[in-house]
Length: 313
Picture 1 (cartoon, rainbow, N blue to C red):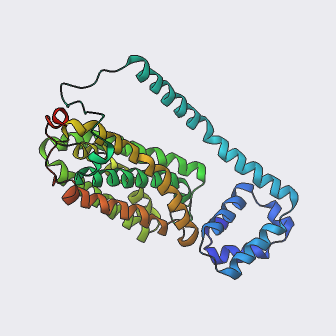
Picture 2 (tube, rainbow, N blue to C red):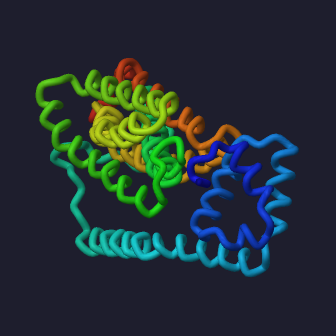
Picture 3 (tube, rainbow, N blue to C red):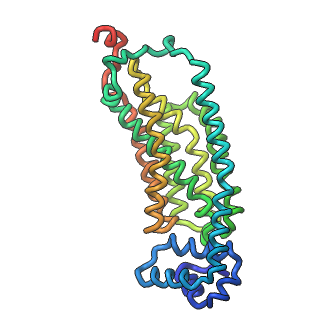
């Protein structure tokens, strides 16, 4: 019954149990209940009550919880190690092959006179850097919280192991949407399509925040489908008509993916204070900014850098 209880009832139920009764509970259910309460908005009295429950646990129970959490952490070690090895091999491959500069399509910048700040002074580059930062941050934040979110009793009411299967649907939707979006970009203005996809993604986040059960599950997973075209579209718009500064602008845009490391931390802080479901307000705001970038921020207001500027500098 633990999975079905709301926060206050769950806390009262755990408080009423003796240490022996808590030890008799399945370790995964007990861990899930404690994690749910930790992520809930507790007042001072409730937080103190939860601390007493933790302190009352038998040493064997505490060891079982630690072993369970260690096992859960180990489940993601191999995929991340594999990803790290693949990225390392890719980096080594790029370094060994010494890919030639694309002098046929872009002017080579004068590295003495052209700096990153020169590129950043162009408004569509500056806004594009922020757009990449917020997009990657929103995408990674949602993906990082999916397992915990879907396992909530009021959302998916499933174990974390079952919830992990739905994460592949979220990322798989991005792949399917990338193929469909590429076809749409042939016929639709990329700025308008970017704004539409970001608006739909934002509405899906709002839907999952305001609903429960199946509706909340479907809406949050469907966000991946509309994440699909955002990165390549923002990147292309950010380097548009940059001439010899194309390399500098692209460097800035690539560096902006650090949002994928910072914004999940910010959402975690929000989850500690607002709860997991309401913490999704952060990705919603990110998608709102991307709507702005598609409609206004990506418009080129600064004159393009002439090809001769590097030579005359």
